Amino acid sequence: MTKNVRDFLRQSVLARVGFSAALLLFLIALLAPLIAPANPFAQNLPGRLEAPSIAHWMGTDELGRDILSRVLFGARVSLTVSICVVFGCGLTGLAIGTIAGYFGGWCDRIVNLLLINSFLSFPGILLAIAFAAFFGPGIGKVILALVITGWAGYARLARAQVLKVKELEFALAARSLGASTSRIIVRHLLPNILQPVLIQATIGMAGAILAESTLSFLGLGVLAPIPSWGAMLNDARGHLFDAPHMVIFPALAVMIAVLAFNLLGDAWRDWLDPRTRSQIAALESSK
Image (cartoon, rainbow, N blue to C red; front, side):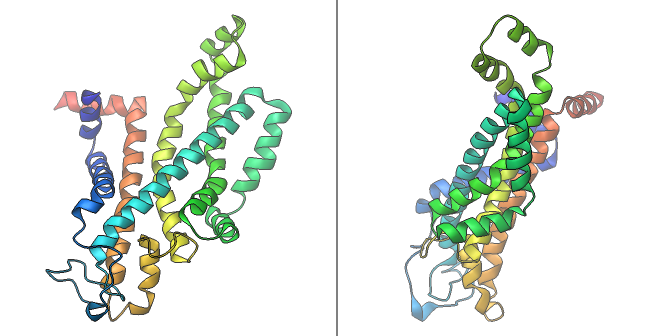
């Protein structure tokens, strides 16, 4: 396992950057209560809108709260939402797509034409806004809204992979030997379609972070005073010119998080591609 991680990180600079940034985000989220220099909820009105200084490295907001502490705690919210959304979307999409691809016929037509195409025909963020507005603000409701609007992409990918894998020799042999449907799906199909789904899940982490920030920016995300990068950007709209630090640091946090998971997903996709791995091995051997 350690050797595989070393080989993965050795393949490119982007792999190392994405992995390091993602690992740093997880560490920040886990250790936020220990490393935050101040209480992210504590208000100090006499010290409102202070510029970055030694006392407050990222300055203070309109209520005098320490922005660095709120950015650190905001990582917990963003990663919690993204992990739950990706897990929920992945499980739902994988189950629906696998069933549709394996059984085919009318089941596949209903799932593919009515469900998957219907959800994918609308912009995802607009559907998420609609569901979030219907459910109301709150971290649990944001997760539910994003799961409802995000499962279709995983289902389409899983369906396409199952349609290909179920016709391969090992699946046909298991079927001819009398293996049950559940055994064929669990033991033979799922292990062979997980790689592209996991790659999409890694990239989906970036999309979930961006979607949560968008909903919070619109007032449909987590409830105040819980720190959220999107809500912090919304609070900073009225102070864009007199306190630009309120915009810069939460925006940088969103950008770094999204970029980290996109780079990690792209690097992982290249690593799992046999042709790319062979090219990397050839380059290493020629040095």
